[in-house]
Length: 387
Image 1 (tube, rainbow, N blue to C red):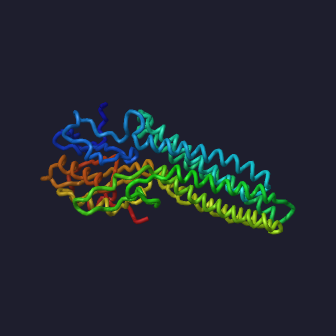
Image 2 (cartoon, rainbow, N blue to C red):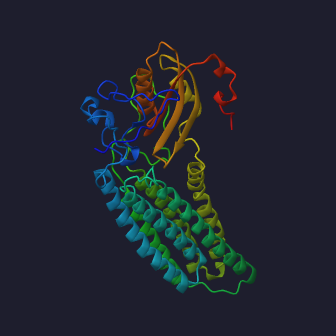
């Protein structure tokens, strides 16, 4: 294993830790949640067996993990199905002169972009960190999601304009047969993608907070075991598409049997465009939070601070920073002010272990300092204000 540069340096002296005595000390690099292990990394490997002073890798050095390979297969299959049916909807929407069908196709386009971005990020995440990209390439997933959202907004704005023009002029004709067939195929496509993406994982949930962490009671372990978040996000997105396709199918049935109700097409375009834009809000919120170096989703400042203060020997903390490279790759750095009689390496090891097991932090950088009474009044040692 390649040696990892020291990540935590004391202001007065640099302490090297014997990992056989304190395996969790220093800038602890633990296996990332991004690799989604079937077992906790603390269970997989005995700390005493770690060679030399190397840290535990956050990212596997050779290829994808078995879980990521499975996710890659599922996302590839779903992406291919989505692309084919998206092309079919574009053709069908053009032949039927239906903006509602085109709106559904745009939503499928967003799905294709999202799944393609996830596949690209899976591949890119295997690239090692460099002296320029010291954290690796994990942010590519976030940037891809931002590009997908922006492209969806642009195309949706164009469709909303065309729908508004149709409602004003009413000089258009809807091919009810083509619209009905295309809408029916879209429903089948979404059902097929949902089947491909669904994971029968024990105790799995389709909620959006699979990466959320909360302080645990003593003796409990952090929630490290969960199935692939990219696949889960795609599955939830496909469920939303399915509901939209059902709505378009209902509009096409109405137009097929009552051609005079052709206004249902631009009206449904308005409704589903709003739904499409609304569905991007959680993604945009998460992307902006990551890019602005906000605290990881589901992890809060106060519980982390209280956990560090509970470590024996710690009198105060400052320079506490929590951020995320992706939704599942969380990092922390902090300065720990300890009593003069406390063992700095024992404090650092205990704090790092608690941060990983309680909150699932991947990269942990702790600097240990001797407590000084004037820290109470020092403006640089105060907590940040409430947002």
